Length: 197
Ligand SMILES: Nc1nc2c(ncn2[C@@H]2O[C@H](COP(=O)(O)OP(=O)(O)OP(=O)(O)O)[C@@H](O)[C@H]2O)c(=O)[nH]1
Image (cartoon, rainbow, N blue to C red; front, side):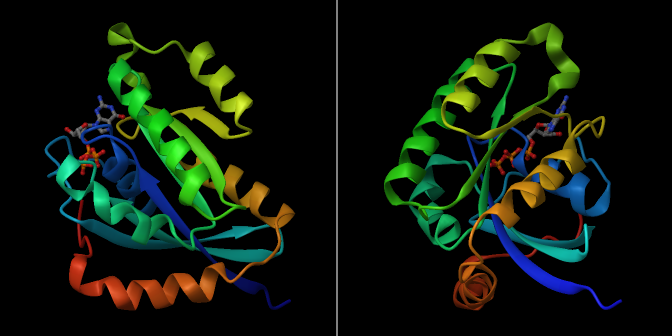
């Protein structure tokens, strides 16, 4: 049986240093680099996974969390099927930033965007500043997917993308895939593709 291929544009948002690139590298290459460099502008990676009788090709835009790149974010969340907003469970401030991203997406993002919240670095829960229950309650209140992840120890990384796959088919097949590719071409000058993590 020939499976249909569906392209899903996904962007990652969140403070600098929370682990966005590490999550993407773990998902795409199953690798982790403790000395990974901060992202400049954005980076792009893809990974195709089977979901039920479809192939889902994730077109992943990993945005830079540093304040100086903040204004670029709309280019990446526009036309996205899903946004993974990442905070660091050991940094309360990063959870406040996450809430601002949620507000911005509600105001300016695609109306049907699937929002997933990832509380990264759950391997260092001794230094925890954000309670899992508080984050889960908040995610529930905005109907977002929620998981605590560890890019370092490969905890819940595949799961977050599977949950996105599960939620996407409930939505209309908007112009996401084609638009995602078009945006990729338009933005290529602003973007370096990561070749390794
Ligand atoms: N202990 C631990 N460290 C992690 C984890 N994920 C990422 N890190 C570390 O956190 C630091 C920042 O990770 P990045 O993936 O570059 O964070 P980022 O959100 O992409 O940062 P920007 O590119 O600046 O936006 C790096 O030193 C990573 O090795 C994790 O799950 N556990």
